[in-house]
Image (cartoon, rainbow, N blue to C red):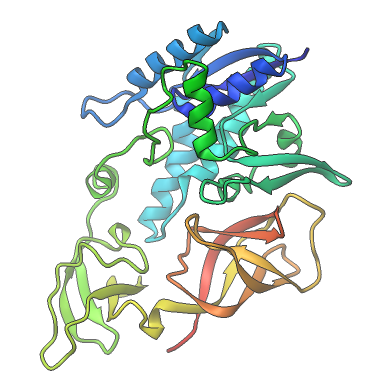
Length: 361
């Protein structure tokens, strides 16, 4: 059977991915990636995760390789992450981490180790199609990670296996327990890819300078002062530190817009305020996982990870970008995040969200 290198993170998902492949007769080896420089603040868990990966490899009886792509992560992912925040946008580093690190340098490293395939514990499925590999949503809709995988190159998907994409999370944990894998009940990680779970504003403040400015209502009333536009995202409620207005309803405030020229943060009251909604967006260059679509058509789009895709009209433009018009205005669509396209179960690709068309002035 062909050799497959499994990216073992020290978590239950990648452990069960390795287990599934071993049970299916593959020659399985593990690869542990530590791609963030170890720190002493207690938030980077790479050392503990490596020990968990070692324990899993020992239980499965497979070799475990260890490698650091910290330099590649910093130049290909983290520098872009900081550039976007300094421009007052809100990036999603996990998308770039998958494209550049896990299915970029790590896959090529696995090939140098003699592997024909690279495997991960992602919740998504890869199927053969008439125009190449198809990226499909996981059967466990609550865990589906196809959103984070839309930017991976098709030829890299063709060398990739995702064995748990057809399993429910509960079944993954049950299989790990039955096999005696020591990570069967390890909590899921929810932090930034490779960086870990930590107070985000404190972490960002180490790299992005504060640039205070006014917090204003939509009609121009000054309500307070912000730390810097980089530290806020559209739709945000917490951390504004402003009270109510005289003769106004006692509703919470939300970030509705960023005025970069005046360094002003615009806020509105109420989570359903019209200024929080967009009727359409413009993308950057589209990355396709299928033959590019050049004509306007209806499909579904997801503009953030924890959201169901919504119906929309895709209007491709001659420069490779697109306008996406929602059937219903969408709340807190955010430049720097990604608009990911779907047709049924299939992920077609996606692009960075560049600009918005407001649903209300």
